[in-house]
Image (tube, rainbow, N blue to C red; front, top):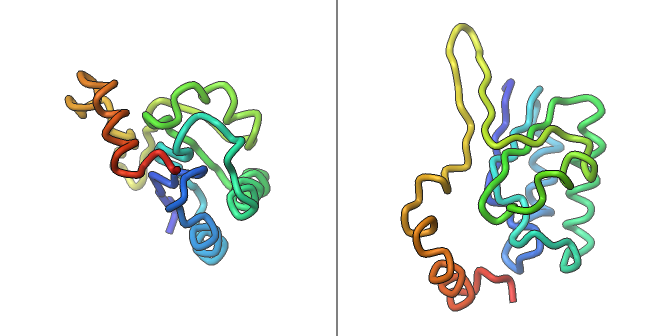
Length: 135
């Protein structure tokens, strides 16, 4: 496998599976990891548990020998300048690459979500009521 893509990790939320994802990433053979948005639940690191810090340490250590790209997601907004220095990885709004003459595009996709785009306050409230706020 040349490229592994993960999205919607939601570090800082009560329902993420950082430990399981770290184990999978350690066992998978790949050359490029694309974190396709929503690495964090909210643009804040105060709520991270030990296993979430361990996941971030894994990503940072892997960045020395593998290509790792983080594509900003809607939950990550405000972290665009922080992520590269925190994890030693590339931050982009979208990522394009080619393999065997084929072109690929990795984009989180929230730009196409009319509900979230046009009703940001309502979408945020819905997240609180459905438990996606992590509390």
